[in-house]
Amino acid sequence: MQEVQSDGLGGFVTDKLVLAGAHAVDQTGLAIEFRFLGATDPNASQAGGGFDVDRFMSAADAALPDEAFSGVQFSASACQYTISNFSYTADGGAVFQAQAVPEPGTWALWGLGLGALAVLRRRGG
Image (cartoon, rainbow, N blue to C red):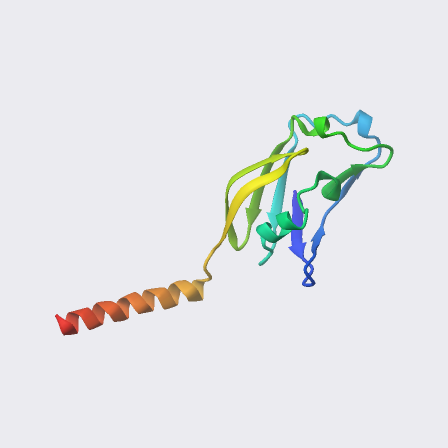
C-alpha cells in the first residue's frame, strides 16, 4: 500500500520502499494500492508527478527498470474521492478520473432543498 497525503503546502507526503537488491526481487503478483488519505486530491497528486514510480519505490544498488513492474497490479482509493477507470504502468504513469464525494452536510442541504421545493409545489398547486 502506498499512502499519499497532502502536506498542506501544495506537496505530498508518501511512503517509499527502498529495496536492498533490485536484481533479486521478483515482483510478480505484487499488488500496489495508492491510498489517498483525508482530503488529499488524487488529481493534484497526478499533476505533481505523484505517480512516478521512483517516488514510491527504488533500489539501493541500481535503478528499477520499468519492466520490473510488468507483473504488478495497481489500484487506487481515496477517502473523499471516487476514482474510476484507474490504470497504471511504470513507464506511462496513471490514467483515471477522480471526482470529489460530497460531504454529508452537502447531502443534507440538498435533501432539505428538495423537501422545501416539494412543500412549495404542494401549496401552490
